[in-house]
Length: 295
Image (cartoon, helix red, strand yellow):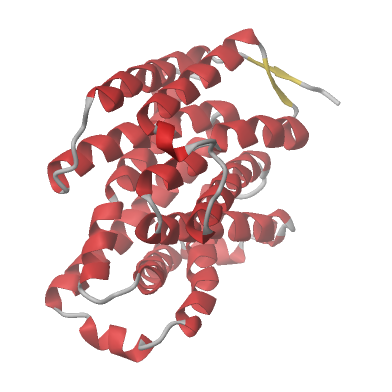
């Protein structure tokens, strides 16, 4: 694989980290205007699904998309996106992030079980380096051990596990096109959101709250999720699952910087120091050697 071809999957994954490091802000703006996280999630992913379904219309005749793995991908990717949004909006952000970004740990187990990927010492070093950066950025002594304490934190943990499953399944399903995998993300997030919508009060009222400004935000988010989902699926299809998990941690750096500039949240020495090993691990992930089991 040429250097240019090797960089495209990395760029795809990093684009996902960039968007999801920023996406909390428009979701928070929409929630403040009276549109719940579940409603805005459903609308944005329905828009992404509509655009993607038209743009990638040939995928509907793709027989390989009938694989049983597509259902697992739909459920895992859908829940990782929905669970993340709801947990971030209703839980303590730092706690939720800490639990969600245990995803590289789950990826090690799932990639070994489903892909036969085995990390050697270099691989464990890179994963450990990235997790140490996450721990420095997110750890607060008063939080205690990173165990869920409430429903939002359980959602964050389960979303992180689903995130790991989705990335490994996407890597495993080589017969599925990137377009089919992307559509599965949009379908999963939109469908799994519907039960949350029905449990809410004032669902119709939320639709009437949508004005020109919120409509533009929803539209731009839908287009962003459409493009980003495709880029991410391309990336995780062509990268080792453990390497992709390390690159996704770059989202923490983006989230810390964006929260400083957009929400006025202080970015102290802990965030700056923690960002260094995450960025370093992202660069070193190109040297993350894996032993592929042939069994």
